[in-house]
Length: 92
Image 1 (cartoon, rainbow, N blue to C red):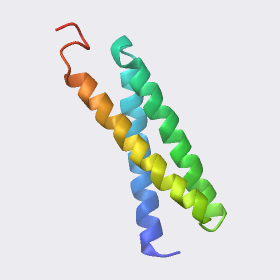
Image 2: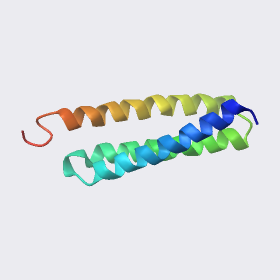
Image 3: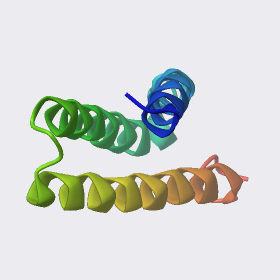
Image 4: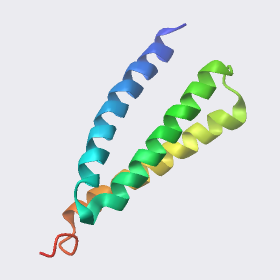
């Protein structure tokens, strides 16, 4: 296995731990609960697709889905970030 794969896995593990923490904390606040749930769902789907990619020797449809879910996860995080900054979220 080459260095790129290992770097991706280390980065993925770090990202997983951080985003799990962020999503869990968001789920503690009623105004952000839905965003936290979306992030968690997409995160676990992303990990599942990554595992399928490794065990299946990168089947193209799964690799494309892995990239697509990454984009959706980024969009969900942008929405969560926006919601934390929005005055209407917390009644400011």
